[in-house]
Structures are given as structure tokens and as C-alpha cells.
Length: 140
Image 1 (cartoon, rainbow, N blue to C red):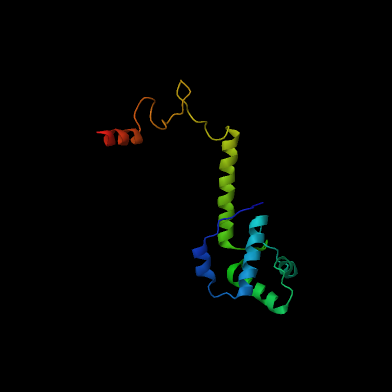
Image 2 (cartoon, one colour):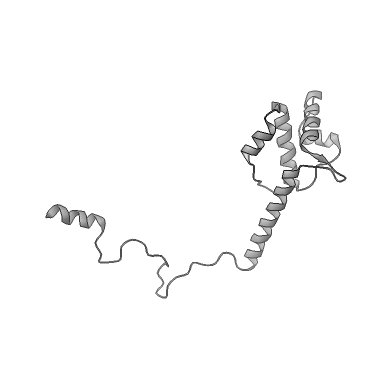
């Protein structure tokens, strides 16, 4: 079950600029359900109306328009092409993460033999800092 999906605002705005406010709401709720379940939407319109909270005739008509425009009716239910691609992408990333976890996760930070961090930080002991150099210049 996906709790997050990538949403490309530019693509969404380009593809939905002619939708009404009600249609935007219906589309968002249908997409969210599609992503959350990672399955095709049911073919039962009454269930889709409940998923989108469409209680009036105009709200149900908006759901029907969104389904017709953005979803493909298949044997198993309504699917949205981009959502299917994003679900597959998320699954592949989850598989990679799962396999990395089985291997022990991310590699540990490499330390030198004396136990110091691999990258030096700050000035080594005994070397003047920038503020020390500035003070010497003002004394001269």
C-alpha cells in the first residue's frame, strides 16, 4: 500500500486546466484511491461515487466525466496510465531498498586506522586559523 506518490504539478496543471473545481476533487480522490490500493478502480459506479463522496447528481456527473477523460476502462477496472507507471516505479524502488536492507543497509562510514573521520574537519592542531592571521596582520 502506497502512502506517498510523486505528483508532478506541471504535468497535472497542463492536463487538467479545463476541469471544474468538482472535477479536480473527483480526480484527486480517484487518483489517491488508485495509488493507495495499488489496484485498478472498481467498475461499480456506486462504489466510485462513495470513494469520491459524490452525493449529488452534478457530483456524480463530474466523476463520470473524469473517468471518461483520464481513466481507461479495462477488464479488471478503471486504470490511469501515469498512476500505473508511478506504482511500478515505486515498487521497483521498494524492491531495491528491501534488497539493500537484506545486505545490511547503507555501508558504514569508513574511518582511518586511528578512528578519526575519513574527511578532515577544521584546522589541524597547531595551525593558525583565519582569525589568528587577521590578528597578526593588525599587530604589524
